[in-house]
Image (tube, rainbow, N blue to C red; front, side, top):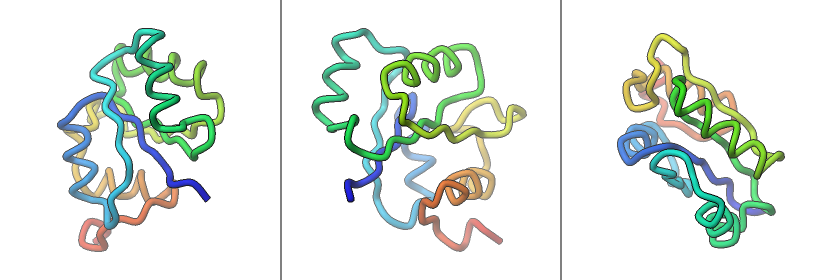
Length: 114
């Protein structure tokens, strides 16, 4: 079974997620929307067509645009959503983020589930 991979927008998102995860997971930062070449590079470099892929992006226009783009390229990817009130993954409180990740069977640090 291939390791799962999580796609996020930025470094701050990655840091926030790593804080709550119990075990390290491959996290790809897109730094916004992707060009076709960059997208193909990511798919090949990370073997994304043959791994469980999860998409966790901000609940804003750029996040939605990226989600659409990733869905087109990676139709098998699962989507993880944060509450719209937080808008940004990086601004989502750790317990909220932990619950969202846990609901997709990521192992999170128990301290964030209190």
